[in-house]
Length: 409
Image (cartoon, rainbow, N blue to C red; front, side, top):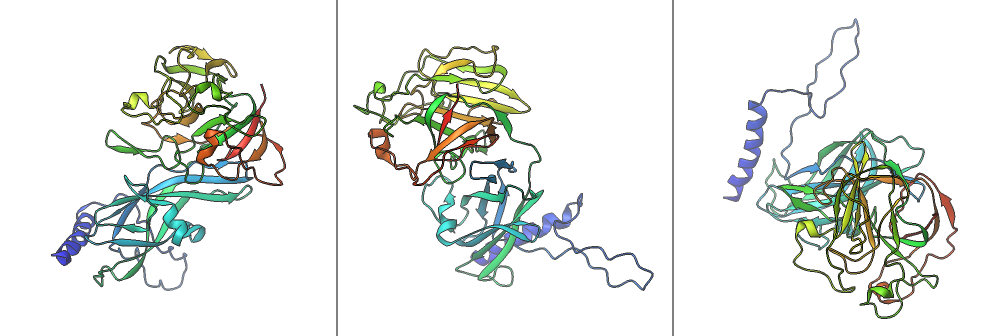
């Protein structure tokens, strides 16, 4: 029965190819021979098709963005589905610019970047009919040429091989994607003052980075570049006193500023403050962002300012904002367990039913970088900063996760 199922998958693929009129060139072809007066050599057609245990696609084409590490990041996700009735183990994933490898994931690193949809456990094994996401971060030198197209070469193994279609080990090239030619939007920071921490930001495996929202029959990565902003006190702590009280966080109520000119397309107020340290439950999709503002920044970019303090949304739909205008205050509403500003830029005005887009800030001071986030930070423990970090001014780059910044008024 399993053998028949395997053959059926391959046969179905063959039938589709045989019965569908071709409207484009094959994905992989040998170069055409040069024009010559000599007798023509043999004409070679496209490379033969290969039966693949996995099918895959990129959730959204990556947009290059320069960051505070002095490099350019291509952050995106590959969704992989096992079409066989047996496990498939991923041995490696290599991102290629034509034949040039740009990134190689294998072993523990690959497992750390891979999750079966609906789970949180790192893995390289995809079960029968299961789908997994692999989070990619292709990092380029700042002066490198950004590729126009990427391909993914995946090495895999099968416990129950079915040669010749499915040998025990295979390397397959799947999930081609274009690289967006668009530039990240340039905006001003949404806050002012020293000590602002980029929590859960791009481009590793933060909670935002790995959040995929299944809405209206489609996966969305609205929080791909999202930042949770929390502010350190001068003593390097986020809170002082009872961590369950809002007033223990000195930045609770801090002003939120418009990051650019543009109209308000959504504004919600009136949702209650959450108790710090307690994860809210029973929220509807519309309540996840809490009290929030969505601003149209132009050119298909929308800014989300989320979890605003109750009663402090200072604008309404239709208002045209100017850069730096105070539009709200940092709160703890919606899906929030500590006061913070959740900020991201997205492809549509819906906070969750959209794809996250990169952005860069006009200028800021990069003061330090936290070595690692820990749960006790929210209960008043001091942060451990990277030693020997030299503060510097930055412009037209995106902050990375764990950066600590000063934003000028």
